[in-house]
Image (cartoon, rainbow, N blue to C red; front, side, top):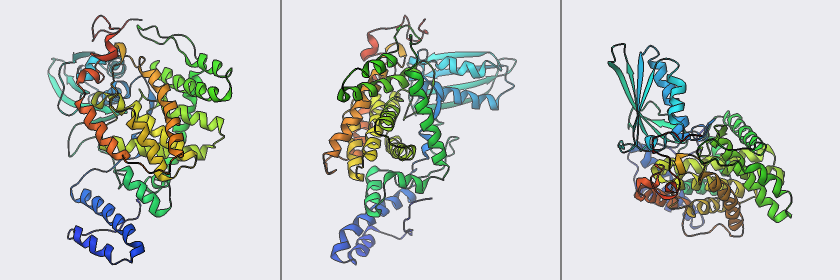
Length: 463
């Protein structure tokens, strides 16, 4: 159910909105003017056919790692193509841009072959230097007949968080229903303040009631990933021979005094989920696989250490999802598009807002916490060593989780008033991400990725 709003006609103008607001008495004038402008901008989006935010189900996806854009997305696309061409004699798949540059390390080819090779032989071509116009993660599927003639081709993009797009403005196969009428955190915050409600209540009004069952499944999956991760030991797959650390951090944390123990446990929980993701375990995109350890670490710690019940945690997950959805709508959560600021930075913002809500923060304090979580990750590059979601990805999740708790604490000391809004930081993040050269955006051709390189950027690293 959508939040209540007065319908507008095509003849409505800004001056009419001003006139209507001025009728009010002095005490109500400022409030009504603000609401009028919020409604008017929503109306403008309607007549301009601007898309609105989709369901949180499109943000929180449950699946196997290590990469939502390089593993989950391509595998989903392969399944859809196979459904249409189950009788094909062979398949050809061409990977472009970031998908080609780091596809071996992210197991993109394995994810595709796992689906298509069951039906017919598969040939995968890598084009890391070719970037298709819509998104850096482009791929083309082709079905061939017995004479090796192409019977159908399909170009599709993995745009982050496991989501797919055909890059079409109209008639895109992956268009899903628009659920939310407000697309900025400022609008939603004002609605909360005017109605006396919280962010999670806006989710409740816009989504159908089954969303809470889905978010409960999300929360169970997050907890299971933490608990598996702190129990598993050994090395992670890939040429880095990276040892798992979560179990060790969990044990060591118990030996410290309370103030340090808290931080050590949060490190352990974030490492646990990120290591599960790196080994192909089941996780939740929050907002992506590469940043999947931040929100679960914070929520798991708060649920155990501060005895928050499942209902309070679900409300926090809803608020975190709303924050992530705003970024996904207005910028990007794809490392290949805007760098790691769009993954770990957004995850930190989500966890910051969730923690602030759990501790009783006001709508403005929650917005402030989220703003700090994202602002202080601006410019972060996505430069995975060997194309694996391991270095620096796993440690970044651990540090972002503790930074989220710091953002909550800093916001709690304030009254929520600050100069730079969350929405402005989202716009800056988008521009910054597009200004960053492609070698720092999930191509493993710059930054930390140059420290340890496989023999070929397209050759699968050997164990």
